[in-house]
Amino acid sequence: MSEKITIRDVAREAGVSPTTVSRALSRPGRVNLETATKVREVAERLGYRTKNLEPQQDDVLRGMILTTTSDLKYSVFADFVTGMQKPCIHRNFILLTAITEENRDLERSTIVRMTSQVDGLILTSSRLSDSTVRKAAQMRPTVVVNRLINGVQSVISDDRPALSRIVRRLKALGHQSITYITGPENSWQNGLRWQAMLVACQQEQIKLRRIAGPNLATYVGGPLMDEPFVEFMRNPTTAVVLFNDIFALEFMERLQENGVRVPEQVSVIGIDDTPEAARSNPPLASVHIPREEMGADASNKLIAKILHTSDGSTTPVVRYSTFIERASVGPAPQRPIAAVESMTA
Image 1 (tube, helix red, strand yellow):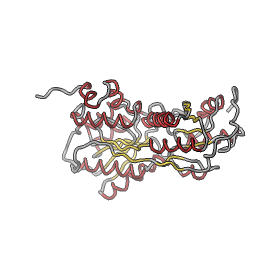
Image 2 (cartoon, rainbow, N blue to C red):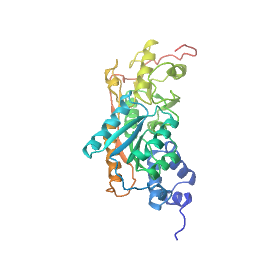
Image 3 (cartoon, rainbow, N blue to C red):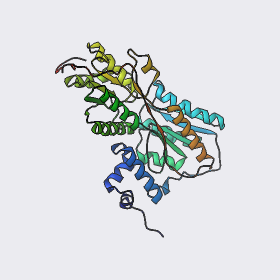
Image 4 (cartoon, rainbow, N blue to C red):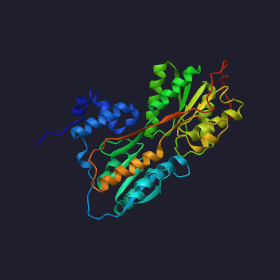
């Protein structure tokens, strides 16, 4: 019998520390995407923690797939589902969609109740722990979207090139400082986006400030943006990049309500490239993520697993996002706005 592969074996093969391996496999948002992907590939090749992730098999094909999503009111999540639907129709599978409202308990109970009724699972921006997702993957073929989990098929967007382009563009326009307003703490994308911004700003010698944003990906406006806005105004920068378009549109509205002109005094950039971004005043610059394509990738990978036509690999499917420049971005002002120590949002 061959010796059991340990985390030190993976670290030695990947050329990183055991601590980095642990972070890459359990909290990949805390390391850069290149490291997380490399560690994951090495772990899979060596057989570390992958053998137990083969789903239980039975002979009954139900013709149904379950996808879980936080919300459908925000077009981002609807785009993923739309993309998933097309391959399902083509291959004669019914796609069932469960809205989990970022509630871990609801997501977990939905999966438990539906597992016996479906052939496979697609978990979109799941808030479940890695161990819980692995348990689901033991029961049914599973694909995760916007998440890296060792031993589970994933479909992800690599935002690094787009965020790097944003930083270079802002530098070319004369900006010397940027604020990044974060998303939910337990969002895998949030960690990766911060890392990408940090690396890009270090390369371009741009000052980067971080402010905690609303802790909900399904935030649709309101008082949760009060604190981040007040914090920004205490030490304003000439440009702001926010976790998603909803955050950015709400933030831009707060600036305008307080007499700050966009982009003449502050440039604002979102992420997601939603329809609302193009319709705002001024139109919001954003990062386009190929969500429908990612949804289709997830369905195709899952159906191949269900029908036993896949090669067994769980190498991530990676799509690349792109920066869409619009009128909310402009040259750095000659005279930045003054700090406001005390204000009401």
